[in-house]
Amino acid sequence: MSRVINFSAGPAALPLEVLEQAKAEMPDWQGSGMSVMEVSHRSKAFIAVAEQAEADLRDLLGISDDYAVMFLQGGATQQFALMPMNLAQPGDSVDYLVTGSWSKKAAKEAAVVRTLNVVADGADSSYTDVPAFDTWRLDANAAYFHYTPNETIGGVEIHEPPQVGAVPIVADMSSTILSRPIDVDRFGAIYAGAQKNIGPAGLTIVIMRRDLLERVPDDVPNILRYKSHADGGSMLNTPPTFAWYLAGLVFQWLKGQGGIAAIAAQNQAKADLLYNAIDASGFYANPVAKPYRSWMNVPFTLAKPDLDGAFLTQAEAAGLMNLKGHRSVGGMRASIYNAMPIGGVQTLVDFMAEFERTNA
Image (cartoon, rainbow, N blue to C red; front, top):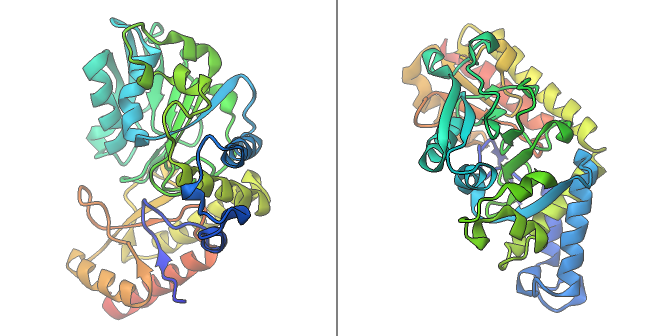
């Protein structure tokens, strides 16, 4: 078997051990004579999988019973609309901090259904920095404050939840969840697409303080109500069973790595290794303000942009895949989520040094 080193931003690499387990269980899961994809989501066997996955996630993140945990479909993008629909009444204002492409899209969706207040927008820095807190225009009466802790495309990360008073904080943690410990109690709601640190695409995790479930306006259809999904055990409709099962395997893998504190130390070491190599070079550069550099998504540019094609071609020949930056920003991007071993980052750093030596 030949495995490449996959730096994709999402769908991203999964732990090899998880893939091997899923492979072994695929045709005959738990002696059922069926794959897990063929088992009823209402069966005792699958409900046990679902309950174990939730228990493991709660354990990993320290999620108390004050919060509902939902395993849903629709991706994080669907939550862009569902959050304002569920957490704000018609006429309410919602606060949004815009620090990149994904928070900008979230704000645009919120504006369709509720009154949008953009607290601050990092466009002036081309989304390479976060506007200074003293310039933010917070609304103390907002239904909630929304931000994106990690912008996958631009590589901007806010490492601590902002101080916004009593207004509930809603966070799109698609690219940062499970990468380090978080204090869930500081948030009103957290949501995350699975395809980076949780599992395969098709699943979305929503963690919501239970009192906020009661906010939903009367005119929101039942299928779009978080409360209905929470009350139904995330089985209001047929859930993405295979993705849920795989997520459960990833949670068990994380616990086997020593939990979130241990994986955080690995993630910081990987990020430091790559950023130090970039900063020590006169050939590569990272555009993001240092206090807001992402642990998960590291964009970088070459001093000679005309060499971008050669860099990517030679990287792929060396087994280093999916390093091309997003089309909106160009350059390169290495996404180094939990499943990326530090050896993979070292291989990239060694390749970058050799490419610089032969092309500078």
